[in-house]
Image 1 (spheres, rainbow, N blue to C red):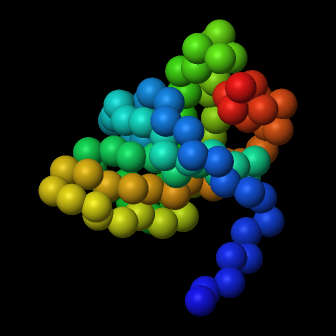
Image 2: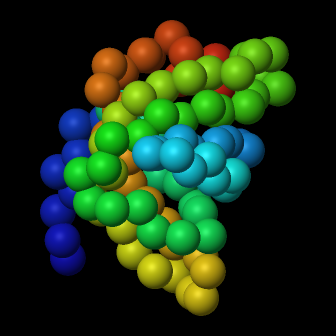
Length: 101
């Protein structure tokens, strides 16, 4: 069995979000969250190491949360369905705690 070497625990949470990179704005949803990153589900892949901006829409936090990061991996789940790992630049622990409710 593969050892999990993650520093931060991941929590599954589905929230609507928008990802901006270059001149594209793509709607999707979160898959899971941690203090250092976020897993997202989109209808297309994002280039590896691409800088992105995220806007997460949370009713629990009662506001839009904006983050920046970079793509660290991606995987095709199905046609027009991609799971993407994004490492967040400046972890915002308090904002994530609000998202997790």
